Image (cartoon, rainbow, N blue to C red; front, side):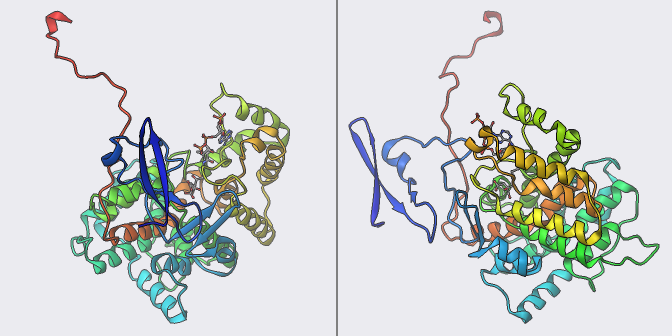
Length: 428
Ligand code: SDX
């Protein structure tokens, strides 16, 4: 029994619930027995105060702007680690030694190719299809390809499905880009790093050799680290809910991709750059700030605000630093970066944004650097999905391997008509 309990009093009835504490962060009321005891539900649309599960993967302190993956701060991982190493850490719980990391990277590289039949799936899309529409379709189609590993109760099947998903996302995303520009899809070159391979498949052409730029490779790898996982965000919760029914893992990840696409979530990086382009020059910023504050105007500052971070999103800090480093190193500049810096400065001194604790999030600066590297805006969320696949897969594994795992099935507050009899047509 938990040491602490919470008492809920409704009228003249009282109900006691255990209070559970994690290793760090808010405690929880364990209300699993609430309906049986009080015949009542909790009500929390948007899950602003609901812990949907227990997890050991990622911890966020929104007030302090803290993000830990298996206890390691995102700033340290972004500075010292690699996306392959962070992927290993999320999947296995500990940082790998050199041979573990080499073995993991080699295993992943063995799954980077797509089944040749899968390439034909791209042909079914219009050339101007949004890459996220293609990613949803192609990743979902992967569930029709692997009948050798569909027993999700088998840890070995889960392991190989996880590795296939992490390995194939760069190939799938790069192929979506190639299809949109009418260039031939590039096969992986496993002599390159995970991220270098992705850059070559995206920007290389069969007609000539492709030289991976180490500055771009390092920046891209860091961007993947920043997007790898983020606790129970909407798309991860989607993957967990889809997976809770025992669904095919590839289909579950396709569901996560669909959810991530929304502009309130992963689609914000595309929307943020489009917004900066619409604003154009810093002199236009005050007008857009007023629009963002106007309750009657649906316009929001894309890349600002967060459900959890009520302080600076630590990923945005690293992203801004990375923009500076890449621009200096590549000797490039983009007036939109100045506009973004000025917009942040003005917004963060405005009482509306201060009071509502609206800070730049991970999506605010990412579009600027992705655009500088050469990605079209429509690819930004596909890159987010590529990186977040390891987080989705790690959460899926954590949930499926929990012996207490049950299918997710929320209830509701019903406000529709109470029972009434059918009315014949002639009497309506
Ligand atoms: C991601 O969950 C995650 O961890 C997500 C993510 C991840 O890694 O998985 O971090 C990735 O999705 C980052 C968020 C990307 N989205 C955007 O940048 C879109 C713009 N931001 C928002 O729409 C909004 O801030 C959300 C969706 C991010 C958060 O919304 P909430 O928590 O539901 O908050 P809310 O919409 O209720 O807003 C609270 C108030 C509102 O005003 P009031 O109704 O209280 O008067 O703040 C205002 C909002 O109008 N507000 C904004 C705003 N965001 C919130 N006003 C202007 N511009 C904004 N961007």
